[in-house]
Structure formats: C-alpha cells, structure tokens
Length: 405
Image 1 (cartoon, rainbow, N blue to C red):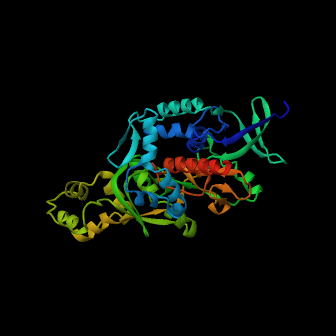
Image 2: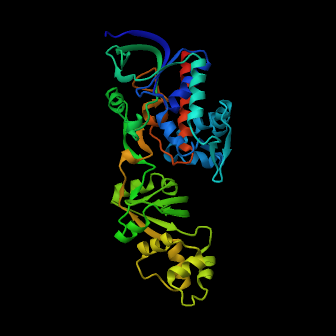
Image 3: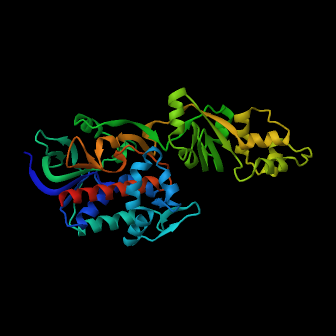
C-alpha cells in the first residue's frame, strides 16, 4: 500500500499515561489529536501497575515528594507543581474512581485496579474527539520531516503541526517499553543517557542454607542506609539477593556504588523504631538458658529470617554483650554485588537528557516534544513514577498549545 498523507494538529506517539494525558489536555483545548500506539491495546504498563492496586501518587509533604526525583528534582519540580498529587487525585475522581490514602501515605483508587479507570479515560478521550490508533509502529521521520508509521494496512505518512513522543523507558519490553526510539533521536543529534535498571533487585551472595530456607520471606519495617542515602519500609529476601520498596527507595546510590567499585555495602536496621539504648536495655534481660534465636525473638521480636540475616551479616558468633548485640541488630551490613537485569526492573534510569530539550521540546527537532519515562529521570515506587508521567504529559501538552497559539 502506498503511503497516505494525513494532516492534524498533534500526533501523540505512545498510549501510556503520559501520552494519554497529553492527548486529554490538547483535545480539551479544541485541538485535533491522534494517539498512535504500537501495541494492540492502550495502557498495558498502566494495567500491570493495577495488579499491585494502582498506586497513583503519594500524599506526603510536597517538598519531600519532589525530593524523591533526585538529580531531576529541579527540572521536574515546576511540572509537578503545575500538576501536583492533588490534581491527579481529583482527575481520577472526576473519572468516577474514588481514591483513598493508605497507611503508608500512598494514594490508590478504591477499586484497587487500573481497568475501570482506563476504560473511563479512553471513553472520555473518544468523547473529546481523540482518534485512538493501535498497532501503529513509529519508524522515525521521512526525509522531509513527516512521521513514518507502519500499520496493519501498510505504510502511513502523517504530517502533524506538532508531535509529542511518549514512548516509555526501556523496561517491560513485552508491554511495549523497549527503548527502541533511542537510536532515532540520537540520529537527529539528541543526547540519550544510557539506560539502566531502576527499582530493581540486587544480587547478594547468600549462604546456600539461608537462600534455600528464606527466599521469599519479607523483612518488615526495616531501615536501610548506604552512605547518605537512607530508606524505610519493607524488603524481600530473594533467591538472587534483595528486593522490595525499601531497597528501591535508596534510589541510584546502590547501582552507582556497584558501577564504581563492584559492590555496595548496605546497613540494615532491623529495629529502626528503637534507639540503640532502648534495644540494649531489652537485650540486657536474663537469658535464662534460652537459645539466642529464642531470646532475640522474645526480647527484640526478631523473626527467624531476621535472626539468620544477622548471622549472614556478622557471622555465626553474634556478640553476647547487650550493647554490641543491639549495635549488630541496628546495623547489619549486607554486600550487594550486582544489579538485576533491565528486563526485570520496574522502571529504567537514563533516557533523553534534559539538556537536549527547550522545556520539553527537542532542540534538534523543533515541533517535537517529549514526555514520560523517555526522559532522563528516576524515582522510587510509591506513586512517584506515575505522578511524573502524568505531570510531564500535561506539561508537554501545554507547551504545544502555547506554541500553536
């Protein structure tokens, strides 16, 4: 089939949260919009997030919230201020999905899944005149700057007044985020930082006995420290090492330490709510012939996995003196030796650098804007990933509207 020319105001390439939100803002302003998605359906990674209850955003203080984005904080903060967590919550409720704040401060829809929200969202977009196209693979630009797609009907050439790229990062390839766009942008002269696994587990050389007995066991309400990076929350013992929200909340620090020196030593505080002195006082009680494991269970409420983690960290002969034993519980060093592969990561670091952009417009390709996980930022789980995807989608759409007048 010969290519077919089409003209419209804005082509949005990518049917995840960033792209769909951009399409909503643009179409609400009266612009003609087509969303092109290469997969058979929209929002596949969004639906996957729904399997964990769909943590939309977080209710913590905004300054602390913005700080979760690390090195990208200064760049993303104005976009987050323009579309903050309260706006995202109101948006979801406007689509008929009531929300609630969990005990950890995370915000979820009461339905605890993504499919009702996504259905209502797509219906709203269609009601606003958005054309939703699936199985449309973007292959870059033609020699004269038009968008080049391959569709089930054959090649298709599209000439929009503006383009928003929202193609995702490089994790979850089977859901469409494969980073295949990077060479296309690099060929235009845009700088793309190498992709790396974010919100990913780390390798630990557990003893065979510990691995066999405790893989899959949780570590509840622990503290983690690596240099200046600290985190609180839960983690999970995996056969390969350590994973979970508290680990992810350390951000890039473990990955960067491993890249520098081949390892990262993380200190685990198994009782972060007790001071060293208070814990030592509990451990000063008479042992009365109890085994160490039984004594620690009663005096410090340590589970079997926690007691054996202490032995992995400090050796089989744990100190008997109460202050020394308390110090061992409050700082159990675990050596991370590697990062799980990108295809096992929840999200990816790296991507299009902010230096390649004027706002969210590509300096190397005027009229082309970028949103979502294509951009070089990372954040832990807890609602921060989705919030930034939505916020950058809104920001890109508003910049397009300003340019189109």
